[in-house]
Length: 234
Image 1 (cartoon, rainbow, N blue to C red):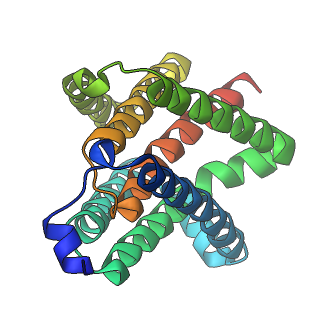
Image 2 (image 1 turned 30 degrees about the vertical axis):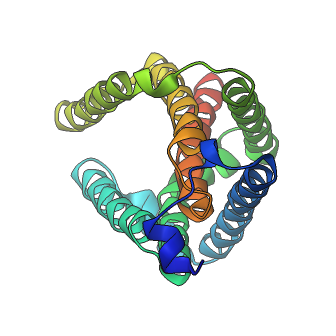
């Protein structure tokens, strides 16, 4: 069966053999790990571009909302490239585009954490906690038959509320504070549960690149707000 046939007539992971499932999960989580590595490398390169760092640090208020809007647009493009194309090159292109967008939007928060807050040690602690939570939440889905698809509506409503609060905070000049970050960690955790359930039950065995993108997106959202919590307590 060629790649196009496999794409139009997918073998779902849930209906595949144990060997096929193992291969799919190995490829998916390897790609998530590779995505994290590429993110770190891109971040290191961006940190060396002083004009870029200064520009990202200068973004406040409406200019930050414009960046957030651009990030959401790039996310939409990247997801369409990864999810709706049979071509592996297009899927990888979408994944790399999304990693680049994440690396760019992370520049100011990581720079502030590294040089004005707890430093590299704090960033590493936040990363370790993020990874531990990611592994734990993934294991819950893999080891149980709980139907986490019920989270979809709650996650959709929650993210729209969060976006509204971010926009309102920018327009009216109030700080969303620690509890907003805690709430977003809960939403990100729910997103990991839902995304893992989705790739387990709704993805085809050939869709390991879009599956990796989906998990990577939830992982980075979790990392962002865990890092914000660490910075708030510092």
